Image 1 (cartoon, rainbow, N blue to C red):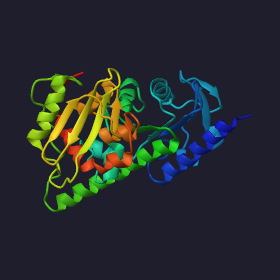
Image 2: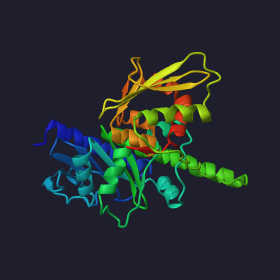
Image 3: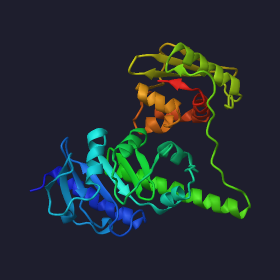
Image 4: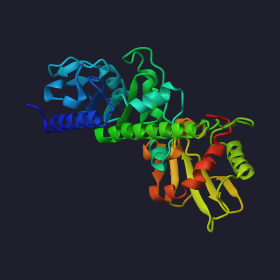
Length: 331
């Protein structure tokens, strides 16, 4: 007899499978869904299961080696991928779908440019991972991509997203498809107006590389911010302060933004807003592989203070970090 947890997982998988099919995020027998049951097992859709028409008999329970432990269906070809993600990351649920607009945009070699602020915040820079077969042969690049962002695109194959719940993972895939559709519509409208849609140029790195959270790095952050200053400082009426902490070493920066200048100093900020993360996370942030706001929302970085307060300063912090990402660092 199935436990309450298994029964609830089965209900969620069946419901999300139908929702994915209804929203054209998957067709026929493609895609797979799973939910972690405990530290050693997860429930996943079986091989050839049609997500829009799932029954309880289509679901199996597997261990973290990808071996079937319960159920009569054959394991999905992607069971090993799900197992690898659960073994390596703190994920509770996984969605693998085939959203057509997201895949078409990637096939056309166009980088996703979120149209809405919500998409920019929740999606960030979505990694694109090349594939060589109809199923994932090498799970390591997918796991690495998901360590940067809770959603990745598998070129010519689909998307994989993770979350604390199956709904969280599904909503990321749905948001990616909506954002991709908007990109395509925007490109078509610009083409109709005889304009060429181009991706934003990558930030150029300049200067001598500095060790992450070192005095030299601290100095370069301040100099770069004050030299380029494309930030909306003129309308500021009060100063804004926040802290940044590298958890591995305990090193911290205090950043003070005023209408006339930006100050970056070594040492802890005792105010209410602070962002914390590992050296690896900060390296990915300063190298532009992770978006700061997305990392906080996806809990890859820790926030002390109010998310609403952090988002209030988005128009200032977003361009500020883009400036800082031009500084080469040594982690």
